[in-house]
Image 1 (cartoon, one colour):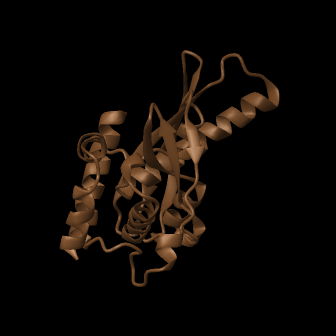
Image 2 (image 1 turned 120 degrees about the vertical axis):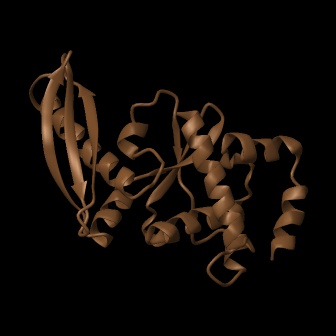
Amino acid sequence: MRQTMSNEIRSLDQNTISKLVLAGDMKGLNDAQKVDYYTYRCQQAGLDPAAKPFDILTLNGKMILYANAACTQQLTSNRKLSHQVTNRELVDGIYCVFVRVYDPEGRSTENMGAVPIETLKGEAKANAMLKATTKAIRRAVLAHCGLGMMDETEVETIPGAKVETIDTKTTPEATQKTGPYAHPWSIDELEEFQTTMDRGYVAFK
């Protein structure tokens, strides 16, 4: 299995390999490899791939996974998480909400969401304030569960970002394979690639 993976990686051009190793960029992967990586991330986090908890973001030529609403909803339900708003404050026209997430074992993680509201009024202001709370909850859930990726509420604020989707069911190469992964990547290889992607995401931020 490892030999199959090694042969395929060697067939990639040097530029693509550099993107995978140094930048954590999914663009160099073929469709089957993208599905493999997507499925692995779902299984590792205990998520149902059929619910499509992740989408793909392309920005500045890079392609990375980010968490959508289905992701944080599944994580909250599957891990029986609860949350508490610990503080709200207005700083220079920025409405900030702080949320702490708890799990059944008593561990907790706190994070914040912030939105500008200084120029808003009425319903627009109310919606922005609600969004700050949603953002804080989702960021806290993702941080608590150890997923080093952006939430879709953050993606919406990035200029020039292009949101894409990945079909985890109908990729031709994937449907011809059987087993937990569509393409013959070993668990060690997937874990190594995940580490590369997370390192690239941190550098990208």
